[in-house]
Image 1: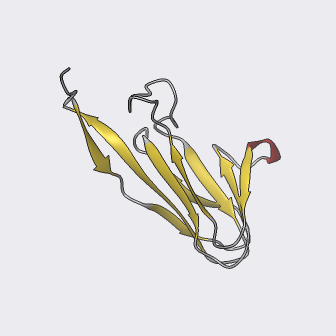
Image 2: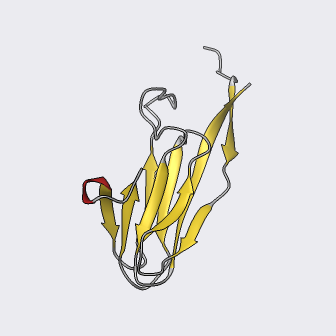
Length: 109
């Protein structure tokens, strides 16, 4: 069985913002990630909103210091129909601290 060499893993530029107690844009995904890491680097909880800041767009509240990794690849490392879309925006709301989002994406060769 051959190896699929049609994609390379690339590290995207970290999205990061200091929390101010108001809604803050953490960043917009320039690509669709295969793996994404959400990291609350502060000492207070941070609410994360996706594509806006309405109550219905609240995705998750991250306790102080919590980080999660979402591996969006399917069993064979290809998931064209299950990933955050390019252009997805993330907002945070916390009293202080920094929240960052890091990601890895596949570059077609």
